[in-house]
Image (cartoon, rainbow, N blue to C red; front, side):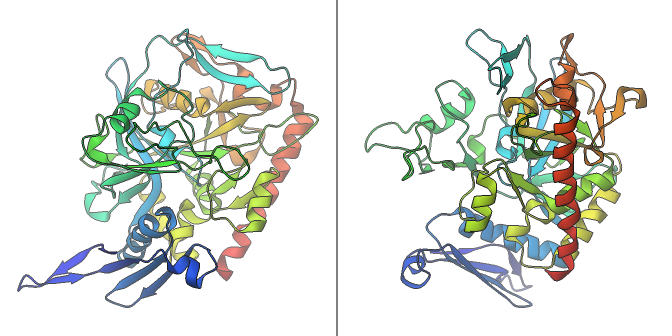
Length: 448
């Protein structure tokens, strides 16, 4: 199969392809020992991609991402590895949130509704030591209008000079990860779209039966007997409910990080609080490193990276978290990111963890509640007296209080060092792990 991305027209109306993608799955097994291989051949006028892979993520889709990054590097703009959503609060206030992060960092989840228990309450987390659940009550939640899912176009021609980054979708179809879906009713809008589609869809690693309805929470089993960690559905964006087609200015850029559990008996780097505000310089640093951790579910990793992630370590996904798809240089990409951040001086930057906050297993609940709170705060507007420096400098500042519908979130979720199962010593050990990782990674950039 051959796909063409981008084109140029002459005065005579002739079509000239800017890039061509060749998808040749059989060669993965006949020439590359079953490995995932993507080959790029770039000239001044044409970018050709040879994708030897049955799996469309790192070949077809990410091949197009590579082309956009290559064109952007030449012209001075970025296609961010991010999702974005317009959040409308119960009081009709609107905030656009753009969520970045390495693979598994919560990009698809940012466009999903909060999950509720059968009694309507929200499970914020479960203590991994005591098995105690922490539930809160939220009567109303905000309405979500997705803008982008994974490839977010930050083209120079759509910027409006407002000091906020303006984004648009670079995809006509979304490649949605559904590993977080376990049972019926967790995401009704998406379930309705994929169970009763008006056009055929493509499912990957979903346990489908011929002539029967495909259910997105029934994932195939890997050879170890566990559900595949990377089930996907390819769905046209027009089938996503309330999707927005026009470019949107971003109020808040959040960055998601997978965190392992951290306890006194097993200190790890999982010490980020639920919400942290960071200055632009630190926000840029997080995007330069883009750490992956806590058993990241993506596939195709080198054996040493898989081993590191399985044992609670970190690996770097690199500049902007889109580096695995880039064909240019890290220095050029880093400078483009810096220029983008400097130009967007009215956009706020926030860090939010998923999977764990200290000794609490939270999944993506912390990210969802942060989104809800930021929107109700009018795009995350904060006074200086509402923030306090985080104990770990990489986390910037933590809010002194987070309340939703008059219900405060426990301080222990905002400052994990105050958790009885964590404490100062384990927190500082986790901070040292993160700091060491951040010091080591940038030193390698000039060599790549």
